[in-house]
Length: 528
Image (tube, rainbow, N blue to C red):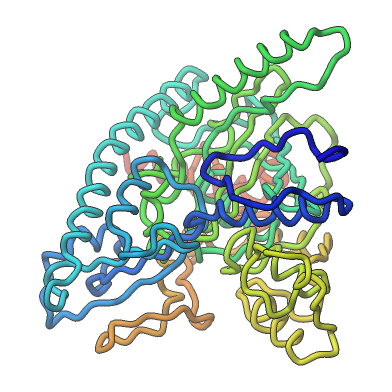
C-alpha cells in the first residue's frame, strides 16, 4: 500500500495469510508482529517429572539417584521430583527432550517430560523414556568428566608456573595484590540489577558464591545449584568514523568466533555434589560434570585481556536460570578500614524473588504489581493491546494476593519493602555476617525439601528447616582477629592459627608470639 512499509522480514515458519496492512498509525503492524512473536514460543519451558529412589542417609545428587534406579525395589518407595526449566537447551539435549516428551506437547509452550525407572512403573510405564535419558546423561557425564579432569590439570600447572601450590588454593595476593574488583550484573533485566565489590583473589569460588554473591545480590544460600565459567568479553566494537564498515565487521566477526570457541572449550565450575532439586536440569546445557569450585579460587580464573579484565558467567538456579555477567579487574584504590575479604562498594536494583519462573515470569509479575499489565494475565505473551490496561490497584485484594504469594512468601522476599529497592547498608551487613558464619556443608540443599511422603511419592518445597553448619572446633577455621571464615591463611611457623589478611596477622602477632614459640618447641620435641 502506498505509504506503508516496503518490506517485512519474518521467518518462513511464521508467515501467515493476512489482510493487507491498513494505514492506522502502525497499530495493525504492531499487533501482527506481537502475534508472530507469540508463535515463536516453542517450549520455552521444559517441565520434568522424575520418580527417584529415596535419599537415604548418604546425600546423593538427583541424577545419580536416577542412574541407581535399578538398585532399589518397590518396597523402598520412591519420590516424585517435579520442576520447570526456563534456560537454554543444547542441541543434544533438545533431541532427547523431543524424543521423551509426552504426546502432543512438542509445539506447546511447555514441553512435558516424565519418566520413571522400570521397577516403579505401572503397566507399560515410562521405562523407555527413562532408559533413553539415563543413557544420555551417563554418556554426557563420562565425556565431560574427562574434560573437567584436563581443565583442572591445566589450572594446577598454571599455579605451579607462578610458584604456587598446584593441588590447592594458592596465595594470589602476593602476585595480583590484595584486591580484585568485580562488577556483577544480572543479564536481561531492565532496570539494571548490579553490584560492585572488591574481593580477595584467594577466595574460593565456592565461598565466593555462598558468602559473598548470595548475600550481596540477595539470593538464598545453599538452596539452588550454581555454576561459573569464563566467557569472552564484549564482542561488539563502538563505531568509529575513521574505521571503515568492512573493518568493523571483520573485527566483530573474529571476536564472535573467539567467543564461541571459548564457550566450547571452557568448563563450568561448581559444586561436585549438589542435592538441589534443579540439579536435574544440569545435562540440558551445563553438562555432565563440573570442575570443583572448592579447589579453584578467583585468582585462578583471572586472566586479563587487552582491557585488563576477565569476564565470567555466573548462573544461579538451573531451573529459573538467573544468568549474571561478572567483570573482574585489578583494584588499585584504597580499601575501607573495615574491609576483610570482601566489601560491597555500590549497587542498584532489588534481587528477584526465588522460584519466580525466570526473567519472563519475573518481568510479568513486576509489571502486574506496578499496574502496567493485566493482573489476571498468566502468560507474558499478549495477543492484543486490550488486556494490557486491565490492571488492579494496590487497594484490591487480588493485588495483595499477588504480592504476598509471589514476593513476600519467597525465601528471599522482602517483607516490608519494595522488591525493586536496594539497601546498601543492609546488604553490607549481610555480607559481613556471611563472611563470619561457619561454612556450610555442600550437598545439603535438599534439606529444604522437608515435606516428604514416601507413601504417595510426593515432595514439596518448604521454607522450614535449616542446613547444618560446620562448627568452629578448629582455630584455623576462622580469622583470629575478625572471625572471617573464608580465604584464610595459617601461620607459616606453627599452623595453629589463621588470619584473613597480612594486616590482621601483624596485628595479632604480639598476642600469638608466645603461643607460636611454645607450639614450635613441642613440635621439635615430638620429631626427636
